[in-house]
Amino acid sequence: MNTRKFLALVMALIMAASLAACGGGGGAPSGGDASNNAGGGSSSAGLQVAIWDNNQLAGLKEIADAWSAESGVPVTINVITWDSYWTLLSSGASGGTMPDVFWMHSNTAQMYMENDLLLNLDSYIENDESISLDNYYPGIVSLYSSNGSQYAIPKDHDTIALLYNQALFDKYGVEAPTDDWSWDDVYEAAKAITEAGSAENVYGFAMNTSNNQDGWYNLVYDYGAQVITDDHKGTTIGSAEGKAGMEMMRKILTVAAPQPVVAETGTDSLFMSNLCAMITQGSWMINAFYTADGHDNYKWALMPYGDANGNGQCDPGERQSSYNGLGWAASASTSNPDAAYSLISYFCNEAGQKKQAELGVTMAAIPGISDAFSAAFPGMDVSAFNRIEEEGTLFFRPYTRNTTVWEDKIQQDAFLAAWLNPADEALMATACDNAQSIIDAAIAAE
Image (tube, rainbow, N blue to C red; front, side):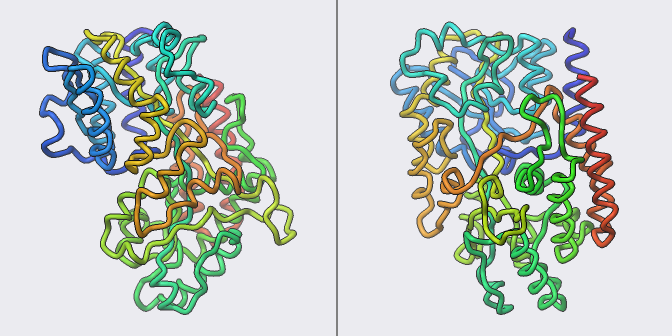
């Protein structure tokens, strides 16, 4: 693919994509810690780093400052909104200046790697005793490799949990969620709160079509189907198992906040406005709720399970959580590749990963060292995000070469009608068939 075609495709995907998960929130421009030179590459001033999540800035800056103290190379971390972030990178790819070091995401990584825009890290990793790709979650490693070469090192991983407002459960006399809940329990509680709170426009649950990784994807997998198969060449969302998971979703939507309300206000805002008792959310958003007014009432529970076989208990594979991971990458055109890799290594080696977890930035990309993350939010029990790895099953966030082509299309063209009219059972089954066709066609065109 030539550069012009690549840029056209990237910009089309950016326009189509919704706010992505895995650190997608909180991407407002930062204050004094971010340079006004949002796009600048390396210079005599040091390294320019680009991220999109302001919630992570303070912790990452602390780690970067420690690296600068050792290396003598200053680092400026620029926080850029999600859409502007990809516009910045695509502009740099067309002949402008890319940041030295930046995040890669599953939506776009393949295109950047295939078009030689990222620094090949193979020789650096080979000579770096502090980095072994075998130590990281394999799905994240594979995501950032192309044609046998590695172009980013895993930065983190995330999981999903159920978030609920204890005060609303108490107010309406409904038993609060536990780690033993199924999706049927979510339905029953949502129904009770929505009915009891109708005069005050309070709903028991909320989920948008765009809540995929942090929402309905998990139900598809709970019931035995896959949005994208493990070989990234197909989908089983239109299967009987996929339809069973989405039928459970449809049932919950009948007692949840209506789609027009969710689309206008957003699930997070509904929740923090005490107008919604339950949502599902990713670990990358913990700090937003931890620092919000009313946070003392916010509680986390394990993701509910899908009772696919109807035996009333959680069997293996019935409690699933999507996980994803960003990668630290460097521009192929950076004028200081050695320093850029050194900073990436500092972020991603075991010591840096542990520090990241301790600071509450995100969970580590190395399994088994994120326990400190649960202690980073005193007064709020966030252990559900770690415990799901032992008490449930993780699946990697579904992706293909051009994820956003089908991802946005199934949200708008396949499932929106079912979200708008959840009482119509046939619409959800048809939506699954349409999603199957959309994904199959998109993969065939890749």
